[in-house]
Image 1 (spheres, rainbow, N blue to C red):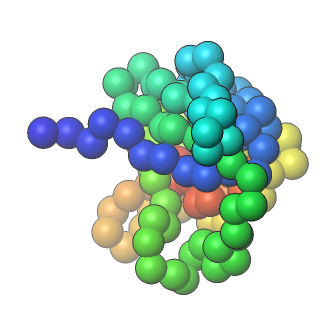
Image 2: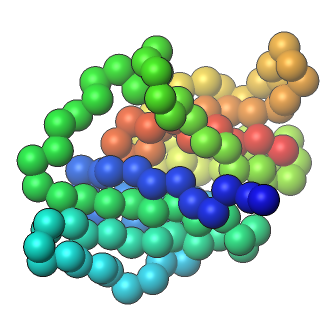
Length: 127
């Protein structure tokens, strides 16, 4: 058994798609639109086989506290080395995105950083 995909509602599909394509190597399918519900989605696929579904529809409410709240808190991308964690984190910061937690070794032994995607979702970058 494996997780097939994680889904996120986003404010701007094209901005979110570009973020994951640019920094995490995502490959997108064609835009899906359900005219009955006005749902718009992309499935973003990664080399590992993992997928992220980004979705938009009108009249979504924003979850203001994405850090200390029940529900999805973060998801992680493994990039293979400390140097890759550091380099990707710096690339994302240089592009104007927020770094929530600079690269470090955590108490449970992970070397990681945490950046915020265009919607403020926490994305962990780890070895």
